[in-house]
Image (cartoon, rainbow, N blue to C red; front, side):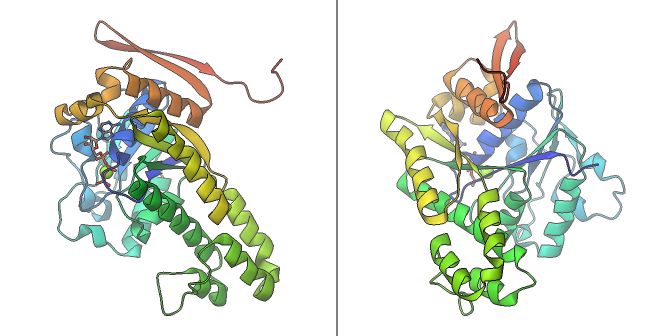
Length: 325
Ligand SMILES: Nc1ncnc2c1ncn2[C@@H]1O[C@H](COP(=O)(O)OP(=O)(O)OP(=O)(O)O)[C@@H](O)[C@H]1O
Ligand SMILES: [Mg+2]
């Protein structure tokens, strides 16, 4: 194995916008629909995903990734009580563990890439530092979340830009002049005039024409999916469209719109009760919203029904090209 495993990371720069809640319920929905799913918390230092799953004290956590004594890393997979769904905790509450170095990040990344599953979901922490972005960029399907608030939209835009510029920077590791221009983590080196892809391309045309095609391909291959959370009105729904336009205009990134989730007390209550909202009431409005998003991610139409305390799933696969009439 395992380069074929589907990795979905849920990111978005701002804290508290619902990344963990959405990621958890996406993982549950996919597991219920028959996929073998692993949900992983990468928010080291401030992890709380276990609580959303109703797990009080995970048996394994952050330190265990680096513990030589655990020869079989598969034992880090924790049972969730939901069939097909395993969980990897980042808990450990070590002060400072959010600042792990890039060697340790690489250890965790290779752990993730060697997991056996149909889909791995990565819950990311807030912010746009490389510890977060590098997890985002190993995924095969990038999901970005925003709420309709302007501050959240701006942070999600910055998050997408950071992810794209990091991709470009890593791709040109062997060309230090380009890396210096793109890696804005070093303000004394970085060229602050290249903060959009249009401006960056102008510089490539002038100075690095041989690398222009590679730059264009990196931009073309980056196609994140957008989810708008905490929607309260029709006006809020426009957020998705506006952000897509912004991304297209300044970054030339073709993001797709995956769907939205309404603002609902059911979501907040489910967090307090430590029961994911999809399990508690699969026919509620936020659960229906979530099913749409899973549908867009997996090319299926899903319907969840709860009868006598049990959840039943019906699934229809959308045919791709060729057979429509
Ligand atoms: N659709 C919603 N309706 C109502 N409340 C919501 C909704 N989505 C999220 N929330 C509330 O927002 C809180 C924060 O969500 P969550 O912990 O998932 O955010 P986060 O983006 O993961 O934060 P962090 O960046 O700190 O990890 C939840 O505990 C819940 O109460
Ligand atoms: Mg979170």
